[in-house]
Length: 419
Image (cartoon, rainbow, N blue to C red; front, side, top):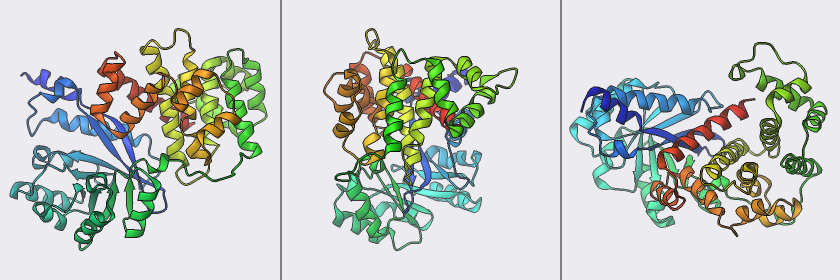
């Protein structure tokens, strides 16, 4: 294999998704980058010192850091044994990146020496998927964070306590990963875990008898109106003129470097015309969604829903689902898919409150074939690659195309929410 071909195959490896990690206050502590290999890279012979591999890791960090909102937030990156020994982690910023030791790495003398060098250089080390294995105990004297695989322990409180007692004897911070529901989160928090990774935050906490506030209701009604084909630009401009905060955010968005305009836009009518009906409607929906919820994890819920919205819209177009349905309908599906979590109400009750087109309703409640789009998004977000690839094949989609769409959706969401 030539150097050029090696670089090409390695660069097909991409960090396509990130999973949030929360502290005990449910504030974002950082993210783990989820790595997805290309079919070519799965069989590629990548040498320990491959410079291209280090470049890919660095590119992944750059992509992830674009969406960080706090200066102390961290990025966890998985390292296999060959890259640990090769010192590839030294290419990354030590103040931001946490070196995560993959679960199949064993504490051989050369691995332990490499970890000591990283510690000496000031890097934070994390141990992945610890379930109490005796053979991995030498790592506990070196790592700063121990990640405990909750699903790997069958979410069994007794098994979790046993592992906690082993890992807790050291000074390492305990991180519970694959925390998928609120009950498990509460249990682990009471046990003394400090960090939590998983999608428990996206599960709705239903408040019996809760009703939408007038402000929330007006925003949801406006979101619905924005989905109508006959919604005019003039009406959007009038909405913006009545909301100074939205107007300011739109000016900041359209005058950003990404638009490449030669002159500054300083009137709402011009801003709306320049963007066009569909883009301005999508931007306004995104802005309104970010105002719907003020909980500690609202930012992550909004990001996930906006990313889903763009991903589902593009997926539907590539899957041929938009011949008789406007692509915007699938954008709305993604945008509304976490409303129950944001507002603490059951989805079926929200759908009654806010009548939507039938295709949107049935995709959200799972009663039509288009619901498979949401299932694909769920698998992708969680890094369930086998299930993801199965659904891609069932939809007759190209895996590389879907990967690219997901990255594009993530980047679009970051730009939209930066305004």
